[in-house]
Image (cartoon, rainbow, N blue to C red):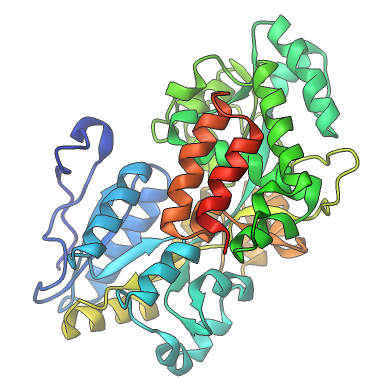
Length: 436
């Protein structure tokens, strides 16, 4: 049987190997014979589920093979864009859909899968309908939704709250009131892997929604002139800087990376009281946090309201799913293997069970009984309810925007958090790349 081979692989010289990537072997890029290549993110427990799906497919298809390569999050975003632009993409491209997928589709770099989904209508009907929005460009489907729904969640360490004799926040004012109380105890109010940039972004996603509603960011997506200068946007940006100035985040957050899980460790070791992060964090806390999860000490909630805000409390932000595309430059045989993997290797029973076991909600319909039977049933139901009841599920901004606008966004978010630019300058810089 032809199982995947996983060995260490180097990146370009501009990205240090030790900090950038762990990778699996096999040649990458189009042009291989006898199989397909597949790049995706590493980091446990998610990597193990992805690798297991590849191994299971390879075992069941001895005449077809997928060679997989894994990267850390930030390194992957750079590597995949470079490879696709150079015509050296892997056969199967893992991603987040949205604006980046639109750019690939408009440049003819990924396959149009619309007719394939028409032929596999049962498969399509078996997935969360909401997962297809970020896979669709101008009415055509360019990606296979996969894996899990990942709303952003506010986590907190109950032990730390008990130690400080305080209650979880029910409003933005509560958050600001908790900051000095935790600082007085020598505990960081919030963990944050600020060097990774996208972790900072999650704060703005919620503040924009809670203060102005989803229409504020939607105007930016649609290229409305001066959308980022909307009064509610300026209010959100200002409140974020108020939190930074109040020492709401762990000291040195700008040098902490999310890929290293150092932000996660701050929460489960009790050095930070709270953390805004994706639903995937639950599995990391469960695997690395000792008895934090099993003892019931990991608390979780949706982002609280902001007084006077226009956003609906059911609204959420994050990733409606993850997405697999096929490189248009791949050979016919590689494309066939990829499509066979989509049809028979993605979200199969064992993979679904593993996602649930890791504290995640797969995007496959009909899993309610499995969710209820899991040891993580309470968190899974919480996540399922967020995703299924949200009036609006805003896709992560850096994926919803075009790659160029997303890079400008992330660069300016760093400056905003470092207090090196005021809200008005942030808005002007973003208006310049999204305004029509």
